[in-house]
Every structure is written in C-alpha cells, then in structure tokens.
Length: 130
Image (cartoon, rainbow, N blue to C red; front, side, top):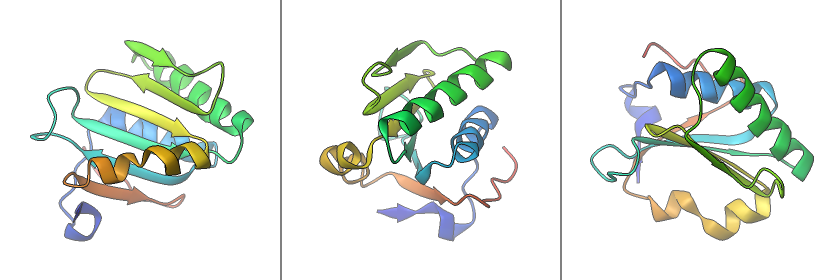
C-alpha cells in the first residue's frame, strides 16, 4: 500500500476534492481517495466513504449527487440508492462509493486495490490545490 497522504504530493482534481468535501459535510467517516491512474483503465479515482446507517448513506450520496449536479457535474450512472447499503456514483473519471460499515468491511475495496496510492481525509482535512 502506498500512503500518498504522508508523501505530500497527492493532488486531487477539483471534482474529486469537491465530492470529498461534500461527503464530509454529511459527516461521512473513513473518507479515502484511491488513485487508480496507471492501475485501472475503468476510472482514475475511487472516493470511499462510510455512513453509520442506511439513512446516512442515502443522505451522503444524495448530497454529493445534488450538489455536484448543481455545479454542472452529472453522474453517468448510479447504483444502490434504494437499498442505501452501498451507493455507487460513477462520474467516469472518478467513482464515489458510500458504504454502510458492514458492507465496506465485507467488500474491502481498499485491500482489493492495495497497490493504489491512498489519501485519507478527516473532517478538518485541507484538500489542497488541484
């Protein structure tokens, strides 16, 4: 695992930074960005976040989708909104995953993409320039 947060050279595109901020506005926990450039041809970044309940998972994902849409960024595809256990919001260049804790633990995307540089974000995170 590469910890880009400690290397100080992790630059996020503005839409990914904004999506991360939006998850934190709804009190998401364990917010992590995985840099998949050079590892996957499907997308450049995964933004992972956890909500403590189905209601919070739905609230986080709805907030990200609504605010980014208001700012001119529309998802290409979304999944899981009805069940709100794992909501996937695909913006092509990045994918937002909002999980219920048990679902995140079960699928372990961080382990699956363990070679990807990662950046962990806290509620008071300084996301830096794009």
